[in-house]
Image (cartoon, rainbow, N blue to C red; front, side, top):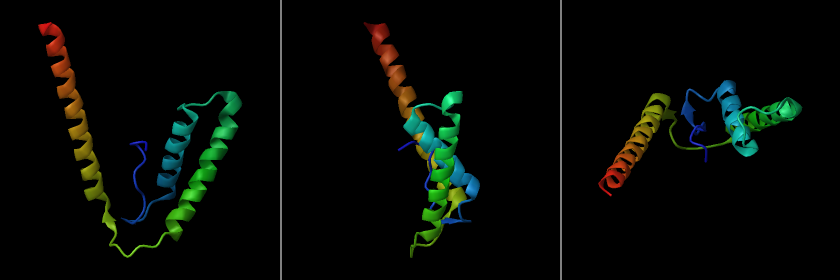
Length: 104
């Protein structure tokens, strides 16, 4: 799953239409393999984003859960912490790789 697409279900306050659109845009970009379509494909690209955003809105509106809503700021903090860990691990790996290359 694309790391830019975040779970939108069961949040307090609920996901906005803009968030549904942004998630749809990221999904279509991932599927299409491009962040900006050609002029020839722009209409198809935009239509796909709108259709997926619409379906996303319906999905979120119709999902039922007994779990308490998640706090947006806490969930964002968790995502940021995971990202920091991931990028720190990459940085350490790259340093070790450079050190190994320099030693040989």
